Length: 308
Length: 267
Image (cartoon, rainbow over all chains, first blue to last red; front, side, top):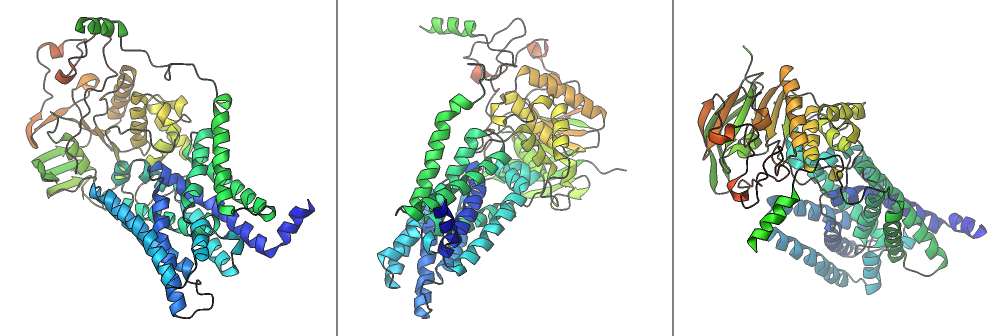
């Protein structure tokens, strides 16, 4: 008990916990839209592109001789992620098969470019690792302010515009026929995804960003069949695993990002395992018991007999 | 004199390289129920998708409720029921949530107060009042189609545009749909409906427009089904599904089999 009180009075831990709490709540909100659009892996792609942004921010920072030379890393990641995300949306819109390749090249370019530029800027492999796998225990006050502002923006837009974003993600053709600003709403999802990647970067790292957006949503889907509740369950689960994971690393020397993701997957496995036991029993076999059967199987079997 | 609900003049639409609509004129006056008929690929879906703003015309004009197609059109007075797409989206959603998205339009990006009640009422109109909180992907194909109709009705439209609303729909849903339409038409709803056969709706149709290769070839009284197609209890089975044995007698047939999966050329 006293140890928990001790942890909560540690200013370093206070900052980290606040960041983890907000990111845990915000990431699944955006993840819900990505899963609905079948773009569960989009976050990964944006994460790859964001690495180049981190590296460029770093390069500019050290060229300008700024005090910690990675002070521009997060702003750089925000800019690169937003540009990358908008480009992905544009390519997706065109719907050409070559778009698939274009995206792949963009993603690999993002990682490779990032690694090269960080090296040129004088970064070590340790600093590279902190972006790839998270560095929540070293959150500075500046980082925290940026994280809080971006998370609140994501939560306000992601939850506030839910009906419109749901409509566009669910049936774009209908949304167009309703006169909804479909282009702007699609761009909003793309930009929200980009911002989420950059705030989640501090907590779980660019390579695991997608997990924090997607796995809580997968858990939500198991326990409810409403869009609104899937998002709510995802968000609560996100907060729970982020705060728990981070707290554990206060006592055990583990990587917080990896632990958070493993915890989330563990919860998913647990819920998925218990699901058949908890689910309401449905009449076996016929999923639509109130619909009369209108296909007579007997006629079919005799027809098959004729074929032989 | 009131403006026509839908007024299409010399409409040309290209989808990719193909010239799908080649100068279509179509006028639907308030209170009319117009069926749009034609073979696969004749441009029926392209025409209604252009009317509701999904596709861009290459040439020609589309006026809706007296406004040139675009941001001036009061889209909240028009209900559109697209051809049923696979309802299994990535994240589950309840019937009420899907229907509620019909309450949004240009200038309203958030749900109004009392959206649940409105969604429930719209679902009641299509006979699914008790399914409001069910996941859409657990409903049958016909019920999913009725959810999409409820989504168009929830905004109390003056004009309803439907694209093959009964294709691949089970018999109880077809009957529920016809009954709903009869009631709405009595209340003065204007309807443009793409159909493959008049079926249960035959009694409601005031005019039929037939498209062939992107041109209007008939505009007038609904065509009478000829030969045995007109007889009571006839099951319409398409040539390409004829290898499936037709089941006759006792009014049962392969009504849950989609008549076809119409995939008109898409861009």
